[in-house]
Amino acid sequence: MSIQNLTKKNQEFINIATHQLIKDGKSDTEIKAILEEALPSILEQQQKGVPARSFLGAPTLWAASFSQKVEEKQEAAQPKNTKPLLMWLDSSFFLLAIVALINGFMGLVNPKSVTSISSGLTTLLVLAFVGGVAFYVMYYYIYRHANKPRSERPNTWKSLGIVFLATLIWMFAYMLTPLLPQALNPSLPSWGLLMLSLLSFGVCFVLRRRYNVQSAFAPQR
Figure 1 (tube, rainbow, N blue to C red):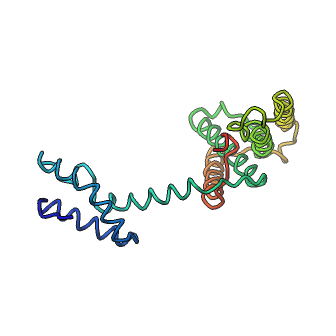
Figure 2: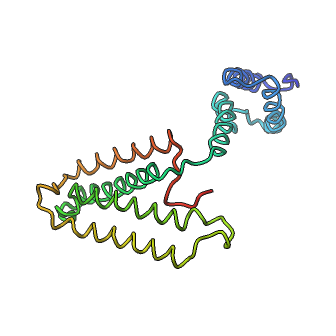
Figure 3: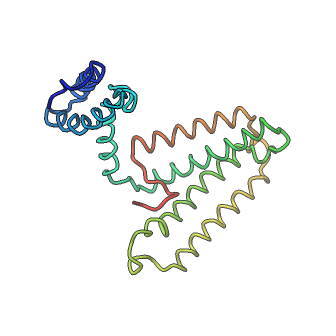
């Protein structure tokens, strides 16, 4: 493999990229394969007066992308964590983040649109954490069987009945929260709702990043 036919700018691109690939722990064979695959395109664009940096980007970022692709493949190959507790927490905090974000944003745009009930802390927690159970039930009886043969799936009507019952309990629990005294259901200001949303999104990120939790909102791959 020779780079003598390349311009100085393109040679510099290859040298910087090679250094980054070495830094990322690529073997000589891997580096050779990557560069041999890229050289024809670089030479073709060079004849048009287009340097490698223009269509491949910065050499360090281009080289680093090959390590990222490997990491993404390894992460995708790892089985998702389907522990009920972690999936419930992930679903609950995701719901809490979304609802708090919507209420907080609406409170900033139109303060009258957010009532003391809808912004109540207990209301939000019940909506999120009981809702998390409902969504896990939906995953357990429906989503996790989506890619299975029909003969291996549970009875459809039984599954729908259980999901409906879980949803009914969720809605009933939510409807009871307005009956609580304000001391047990304190209202949060808009900025408090937004902070709660940010914190909840952070918990979701940690759960999915650290424990590779399967989302209850989508079929298992």
